Length: 286
Image (cartoon, rainbow, N blue to C red):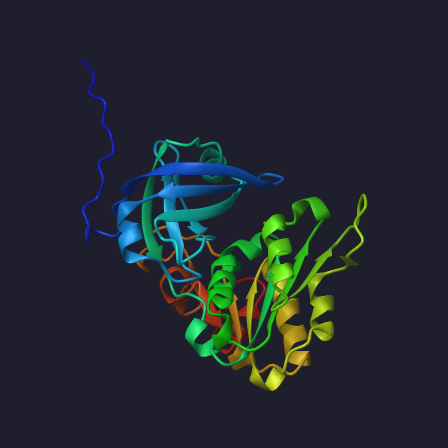
């Protein structure tokens, strides 16, 4: 007679390498091959998370993958992760239905510099799925609007149908206290907005480069060009922060899978100030 082994929840304060059992609360399609899961986890609700952090999500019997948190840090009772269906684990995650169990470790990593941004203009530059890791920072910026100067969101995707969180973007536009510009690489259908890469929006954005901070997330090639455009606009390297993506396995700087020169993306990042990784970004093979 065979014995069926079932996962057991990790107690609070347990080994960070040991997943605890969480459950899918809601599942929503947010674009072609993009799904957003809301996950219930009692331990996370007690501890909260910092905008820019990530969790390690496990589909039992398939594997584990790092996914950035994309929800509101003021509502830690449910964790939100936006996932692109591109591999075995992410595909299995995107198919999970409400009530399904999954493993969860985290949150891990260094987040966006919300305190350093206080009193300054904030320029958020997102490419494609890179808007998801930036969304918690936008929630925080708008919830504490009086603490910041101008807030600018520059967002680019390949096509109009790939725009994430479309209803939310429109709701933010109606606030009138955030400047939002969206561009697409290829206009189709009735699109009447900007056409071109997101970096073309930087010179048009209204912010004071001497008193601004930039948060950048997207494909690495897009971030390289975004950093160049921000520097051309007058921002110093010390005022530009980016979220790096690497193949993270342990999430605690032990295994070395995510080593990026002398730093570990999982432990020292994923958010880095540009001057800290500038020389490494110039090396395309890293």
